[in-house]
Length: 88
Image 1 (cartoon, helix red, strand yellow):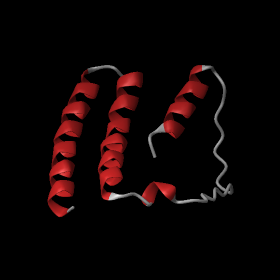
Image 2: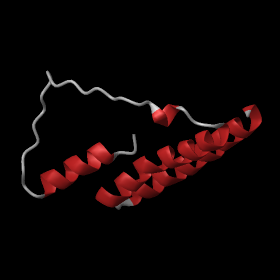
Image 3: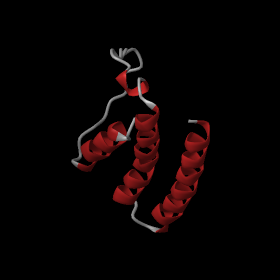
Image 4: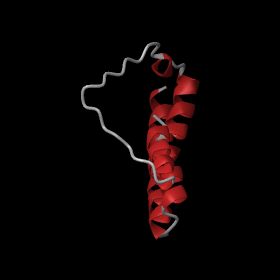
């Protein structure tokens, strides 16, 4: 949800260890609390969730790509805030 899985994988690979993909593995998520949000929390969730890709790319790339992505992120977040404010 917040790029933790990609970050964990990048950290593991950086230590020289191998990652394995097991297609038969099944993951069951119990709870669903991230979708049970009030309008105010929904706005905060949207802002936090949109920030994760930029943080990941900045951490592992650090080049001009992170700046381009951050500018796109800001534009997208302003649009989302407008939409949430207008419809909530």
